[in-house]
Length: 84
Picture 1: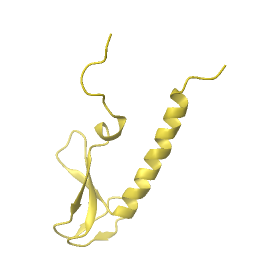
Picture 2: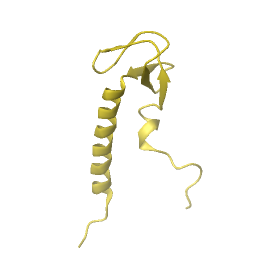
Picture 3: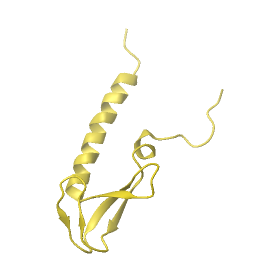
Picture 4: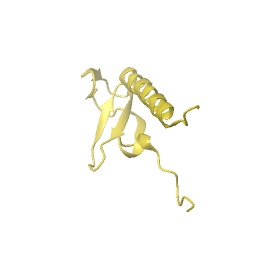
């Protein structure tokens, strides 16, 4: 059977989609609890099944991306056909 429709991604669909915004007001980073000043670039990650989002400062978001890359590498290694 041929696959139909858009190929889903494990990243973004379960964790919510990411977007980068300039904060309208002062915010707090969800991870480090640091202050994000007004007009500072930050990342917003949607909460699946909810209308809200989590806000992260860019250093924390970069760490999250690095962890995601490591997790993805482990998944790719586990899904690779084994050499016989």
